Length: 213
Image: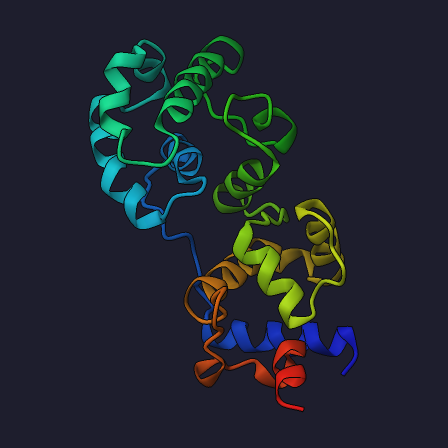
C-alpha cells in the first residue's frame, strides 16, 4: 500500500464513521475554549471539564479574568496538572488579550502564540476548532498514532509530524482530521496496548501489518 492509498483509506473510513468528530472540551466561545486548552496540557479533558464551569462562572470574559489575582484563580484550578504555571498563564493571557487585542481572542496562529501559555499546538487547536482553519495540532496522541499507522515517517518532533500530515490531508479536512487522530489515539490506538481487535483501519495500518506477519 502506498502512502497515498493509506491516507485515502483512513480518510474514507473516518469520513464515514466519524463525520462529526469534535473536541471533547466543553466551551461556548473562543475565550472559553482558549482557557480550556491552556489548562488541558498534560491533563485529561474530563478533568478540565470539571474545573472550567467554576472559572467561566466567576470570570466570564477576558476582562474579568485580567483583573483576577493569583490567589483568586489558583484555588479553582489547583486540581489540574501544573496549577501554578497555568494560573500565571491564564492571568497573563487575559491581560494581553485586553491590552493588545481589545478583549477579543485573536484567530491567527501568529497572534495566538504571543499569549502566555499558548504554543503552536494550542494555537492550531483554537484556529481549527473555532474557524475551521487547516491547522493540525499535534499532541501526544496524534504524534504516536500518525507514526504507528504510517501516516508520518521518522518525524522527530510535533512540527515535523504536522508538516507531513497537512501535506497529505486535503485542506478542507485538516481541521476534522485532527479530531479523528486524537480520538483514535485516546480510545482505540492507545499507547501501551493498541486495541487492534476493535480498530476499523487495520487494513491500512503499518503497525498491525508488522505485528501480524
